[in-house]
Amino acid sequence: MTKILFIEEDLITFEIRKCIAAVLEGIQPLELFHAKDATEGLELLDEVKPDVVVIGHEERSETELFMDGLTMNHPPVVVDQEESQTSHKRDGVTYTKKDGSLEGIHQLLKTAQSLAALGSVNTDLVQ
Image 1 (cartoon, rainbow, N blue to C red):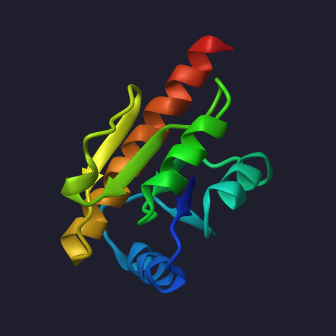
Image 2 (cartoon, rainbow, N blue to C red):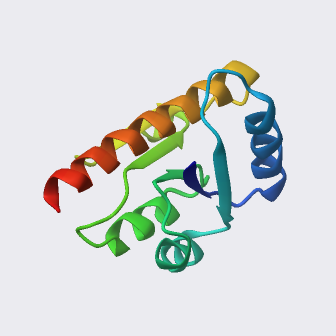
Image 3 (cartoon, rainbow, N blue to C red):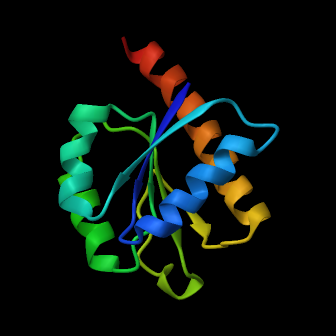
């Protein structure tokens, strides 16, 4: 089961994604967790041990705060954002264009699962 930590201020959007993930075909079982901001997200990293983190927070400062707080051995990170915010890209981070449609959410979850699978392979190689 893939654990995905979503960092976004809108709990309703998270709950909608959670419901959609439960009924989508073509993806492996998921366990989704929610953090309302970067501080809570960093705290949940140790507690939840997610396979991947998806940041969908509207405030770019929250994304930067989270990224600055990461340790070297962190899970893959996906930043799901509006196109206008793509000027501050970081190496090793996957950026997706925010799309609230059913297909957009499906693609985001598939991307997260793919990165989680790659992350576990890389972790196995390091150990």
